[in-house]
Length: 123
Ligand SMILES: [Mg+2]
Image 1 (cartoon, rainbow, N blue to C red):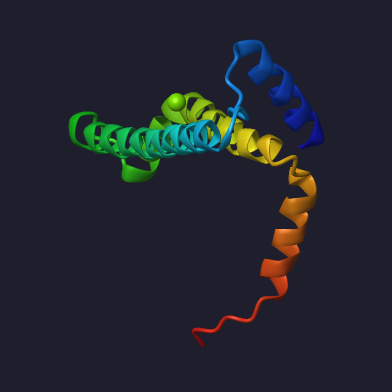
Image 2: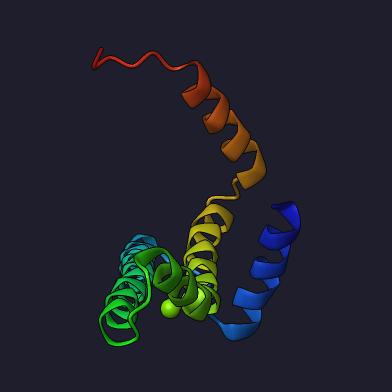
């Protein structure tokens, strides 16, 4: 995680894609813009899964495959695209962490431990 944060810090500087630190309004606009870009990338993951389900249905209907066989083939066909969309999401999430000078690895494990011991209030 530290390696990815360091890599993206340099990458975003090189591409001039850092969150603005000019003043409050510039920072606010830049954060909101990057947040919208992140949500777009999240929806692109959904699009890829939707394509997998559509491809599965097509293979079942037109190629007479079983659902399991068609689903396995469809997943294989879209796996690489989903990897790219997940990478896009990670890039924006890490950008926020870098902007706040957060150690994301520390935040990640801290949160996962918190979830592990959390009592479910619904039951
Ligand atoms: Mg994308």
